[in-house]
Image (tube, rainbow over all chains, first blue to last red; front, side, top):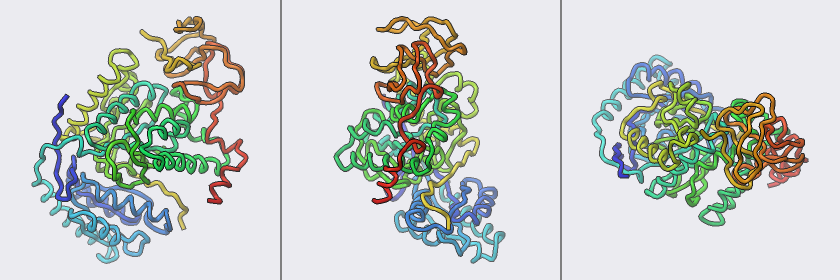
Length: 388
Length: 105
């Protein structure tokens, strides 16, 4: 099948499928001012978080990489970085890094430099208004699947996830890889028990070794807590849905990776340098994973669920896919596509997968997902160190 | 209407894709018919044993190990957290060796 997609071609060669102006607070103290701007200026999005100060080392770097990655995402036309002024994650450093790596408009507003919330909000809103107007002048053009980085994730899984929605996403992941695009597999926690199957498909020994390294590091975090990981994962909802152990959940989750060769293993919020199937090292936490993938450049995310979930991203459309028909009806407010038809024998994995390809093309071209309509702007950074 | 799926021929559990009641008899290809023993039945999405599984035996789904039987399980019984332990991420039973190894690195 030939699908038609449209998007916004950026001057740096990347392609966006949305055209947001991002108001990016680099510190928790600036999140309220950033939200003020989104209330004043249509076409802007922002995030609420609790980070940006008293962080050190690799934890500082990971949060920094996440902020910068959000700004760099091709769905973002321009960025207004908002800081307080005295924080560890200086707004200026984040703004400079984004400006260095792209030519999109980036401006900085610091609350302390603008004598407080009111003037900082006014200044940021003034800049954002100009950016939104400029963004609105850009027209969509035809794009291809090869322009896309598609994130894949499962959350609120049930025992059907590995039978219907995840294999259908696996089919799509293979199709995207064959088309020259990139598909991200993530949630390292939920690949514990399935790592051998993915290592076998690694491009080379280095990638295979990295697979075992990230799995070991994640499992060791569980050991260090001194409890059975099952006390937190699979979650109570997963267990109610029939998932018994983490290994069972993992084997179902791995189905999202299809059967393509695993070309690269990237760190949290790191942009893949390879095309095809790429593994990003993230926790299983839905929002932290979603944030990592979008900060890594994913313009669109496929999210499968058996229990149902409202999850969405401020900058990327999230297509939510139900594993069973019952939940697609009961949680229809939040779900976009049903693959329960596979379990019922009404559709093959390939047929459901092609339906998903069509939905990706339509959503990329502007159709709004349920999460976008509900302004479900979830954001959460995977912290890997203590706050000081 | 299918009642259950078995992912691989070597699996020892099936996943119910419709709610099964106690005493329902389920036809399982290549095995004896299985009568559902659990008094509460098997909910949609939950697993039941298609053969007898002795305590300490691996539970196999997708042709892979998903855990280990924590007690003897009869064919037709509900297979879930009450009679299956996970084998991975077990900080509660680990002797700490792996934790020490990563710390040394």
